[in-house]
Amino acid sequence: MITDAHPPVAGRDYPRTFSEFDRFFPNEAACREYLRQLRWPAGFVCPRCGDQTQAWVTARGYLHCRACGGQTSITGGTVFQDTRKPLRTWFCAMWFVTSQKHGANALGLQRVLGLGSYQTAWTWLHKLRRAMVRPGRERLSGCVEVDESYVGGEETAVRGRQTEKKAIVVIAVEMRRPKGFGRVRIQRVADVSSTSLTRFVRQAVEAGSLVHTDGWKSYNDLPQHGYRRQMTVVSDSGDPAHVLMPGVHRVAALLKRWLLGTHQGAVSPRHLDYYLDEFTFRFNRRTSRSRGLLFYRLMQQAASTPTTSYRDLVGGTEAATRK
Ligand SMILES: [Zn+2]
Image 1 (tube, rainbow, N blue to C red):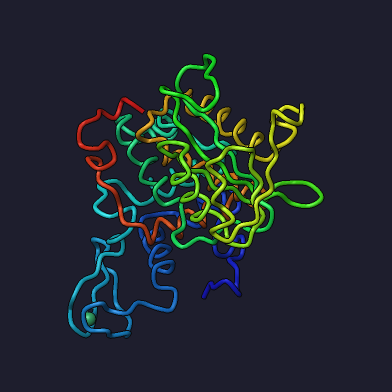
Image 2 (cartoon, rainbow, N blue to C red; image 1 turned 45 degrees about the vertical axis):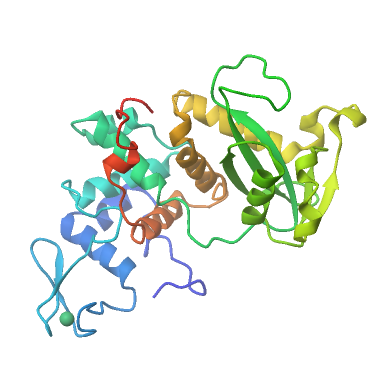
């Protein structure tokens, strides 16, 4: 059984290469078994009668309880619930998304899997993005840089903090001593008010941490919430912002390059949050020795994340062709 004390083992718990992937997942039955092990690592317990004796898997992918005869869907309550496509195709999509450093866009996924429609590929990527944020994840700690950045819209000069077309995102980056970055948290905010920025910091950063910001007044309340604040006023120092806040500026540049590169900048503000989740998932695992471990983490989270309907993904009105 895999726990925090017993981390997953490459080559045993997840594939390291595509040829191992092929060996792990030769058919639907193997994919279902893998998912079953992830969902019930200590063995299946019937949710109806609590029986723990061995259930058998039906031809349609249900666990049939020997005691009460009830059937439990292996994919129920996961990202894969109600899918009409083979699980193996989903697993391939997840391998494709995690094995590439910068991920995949919908067109690339459609091509590599031979999916009939762009809409399916787009929907899958969005469903998977919803599984990229681990609920109850730990907040950042230590020394954390926090600043806002502006994403999307036209690259024309936007002065100061006023912006209409661009989305405002707040970025928090753990700063390692003597150098290097730890984890990040990124979130879109409606405005740069004290309410919005303080709420973000409280969700993203552990109280007691040293929060490094610029001189913006909306950060003034942080000490009241148990943070130590280090303030660097950019205009006073004469140094450009990227020198004074190197973490945030590095992450903002990577984020913008990723949105423009992998996604050709075609991300609508309403879906930006989920792209931020994917960026964060990748960034925080950038030092993983094995890409297979990313596949495994995504699979773990997909197995415990309820699916999102296409209607909910597009907000009920917007066509999938709008990214
Ligand atoms: Zn039962």
